[in-house]
Length: 92
Image (cartoon, rainbow, N blue to C red; front, side, top):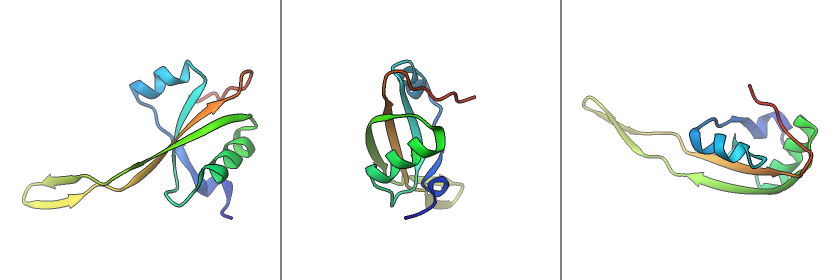
């Protein structure tokens, strides 16, 4: 198993994730090879909270163009983590 800090890359702060934060749900960018159990254990150890469930989304790379050069964005795996009542994570 990897180090917990290697699994969780960082929080994703968008309008939609800010709305979900009001419902005690936080969105994180995670390692594409991590599974839901590893993500749950990492969140519980790093932030000292209890996790109710974890949903994951694999975001495929999109084709992008800069001038005459074409390429792809990086693939990303998002984890939408619902915390149990009484638990909260303070992200600044």
